Length: 421
Image (tube, rainbow, N blue to C red; front, side):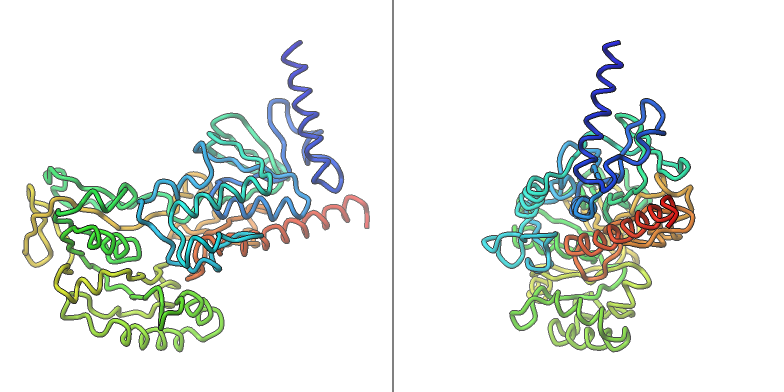
């Protein structure tokens, strides 16, 4: 009897919350939801920048919304990054709805600045957060989505997946890597450049993460070698002391791709010169085409190229295999680094959750994103899963507004049908 009373009290509490946000004063499914399943109008999965932005956009449109997060805090992925990390995106273009990151944080805020900003954003908007609640599986349940989580079953009409672009680290499987006997880690495990002072470090991968980590290691006093398999499109944070991101975004949105690639190539040549003799040849594909075809953003230099030209760092070719404490490169040259850091990218990791729905492309990226849902999965949205040159924080509110607008249109259409209009 006591258990039943507690359940009734909880259901009433959910109804009170809904009446504050929902035009018709109820949570969809509250009358038809089977006992033991928690109903909501909208559920957002992931308490990073995109998930928080989506929750606020839905709340502002009158949807009762909760955010479920498998960790015990907001911005969990940001907290796990290395201490020296700073945004490559310009502070005014790295904000969610409302006030941005304080000017005192500088043009390019640090990791800790971003964490504090996201914490204050969640508090300011009174976002309802369910921590230590991992989404284990999901399926259609008539007009709703049925979610199985690590804490309980839930049901909602509108579901937003915002689990992040960099979710599952991709680690190469080199022959005899287990024989190395020294530190061999993915960049997701890298915590601070200061710990590598005075050591010989091989960074594998010349993408954005690889170049950034290499730059921090150089400044920390490490002897850095960068292994380059695919020549990157290099970008500077600033051009003529002006932030480069607005230019990248403008050309990507308003200039034909071939023209934008030609302009970027000319700026890259003027900024860095010909780096072929330093071990980094020019990319065979333009920066905008590279993102369209391979989802690769430009690599933003923060001092590594200058070290390369000074001779205090070097670039080599592809890692082929390991041989005891040595790394064997393609062509036979051998290195004996003290540690190997693999900046070899991430996967989205969505296959286990939504792979059975047919909403992902061959690369694991959602076919539809932002405010567009897939015909096979109505009212399922992805936030923060696409954004060339925008920066992940800036991208969140853009997708969030589109998702909230699409959900509002769907709600109006259902109301008209149910009312016989």
